[in-house]
Image (cartoon, rainbow, N blue to C red; front, side, top):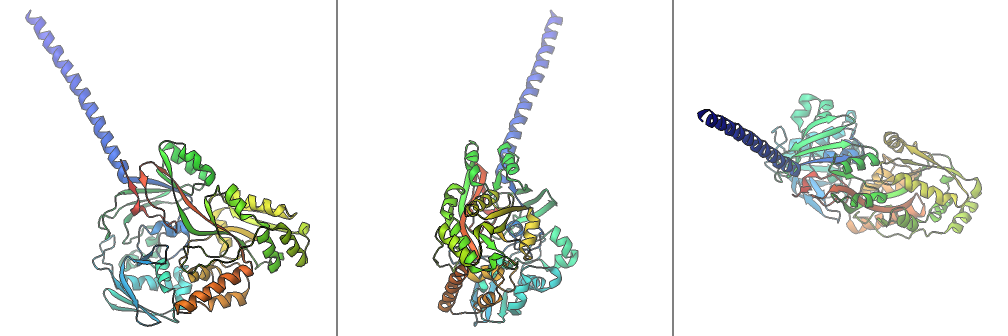
Length: 517
């Protein structure tokens, strides 16, 4: 009897230990699950098409670079897409006279390494841009426009321009992202471009070339702690691969969803589309640096009449775009409506004949990227089809993104190419890149016209300046320098719990992203 009782007691002890272990294991699983849920609400993995060329501020305006690094650095001022500037690192600004702009800087802001942000930070950044050795794309226009930079005191600076510059605030918005002088001088510009230090909402962690870049929240950010604490940005050039990554859960958010893939994203109960109209103009550029029929304005006008943009918006863009008739978008402070080229194939044929050509003898190339711009291949194929209806021979050339950009910045494109420009805030901010003698992306080779456009930039009086900008817009379309197409929607595929409002310039603002439970 004693032996039996002792045996039962041992069995009960063993059972209790097993139950305790199971309970502990289950509790551990639940704790892990809660931790995972908590982590997912404060972290995000984003899939983008292109990798930055550098992580150094105030160097490269390409969207693949500037759109990412704005999270590491910060701007002096922001722009709302409606003509209004918003204080950021600069709290106020004014004109001392037509040549002098004074800015008061925000006090108490520090860089990620603890160094103070102040007037010397801005001076160092301006000097960096002006040094040709640093190859800042912004540098050439600052060399031309800036006469002197003054540090008035620790938190007051002045810019003195060579000429009255009414668009100066637009320059400040797009170009200046302050660098930390001590860090750049200590490690050198090459190292600083790989491992950046800024004052932005996110600190740099790691850059795996060709794969990803990771950030962590800057909890001392002057606007407040970011909700998203950990960020991984994966570079996935092909959209099909980005979509697969979203559907499989490898990423939480992807940019540039083509309109023909919206239903597939929305068909997943765990996903949704986040969209907003952009300020980025899509157009066909005519390269007149090359000897071809496109040097004749009548041929360029004919090609405008030959394209049914309304049909393309409906059938290719699925009505996810707004038609453009000129070179600027409604988000641009200088925008005015200009007369559009109606769809008129017979008029197109007539103009080509008046220019001394036969439609059937016209052989032109049309270049594009393959997946860098949303729907780029489909759009170009549809446009080629429109032109071939007239009897032309159109050869479509698809370029790798890096090759395409190199061609676009060196006038090496063939006849025509599809392009989506960065959103611009004022006429000069667009025209200085595309339609001025020193424009990095210029493609129209008419020095007289480009010089005439550049001569309007110094106009300071607002009324006179807006009239000049109107005249430019009208003249550019009379010259048919492009085929204006549309501004599209910035389309993101996202997990259901993600929310944010896309910006007009498609900048990736991770600080504004929220994740719910």
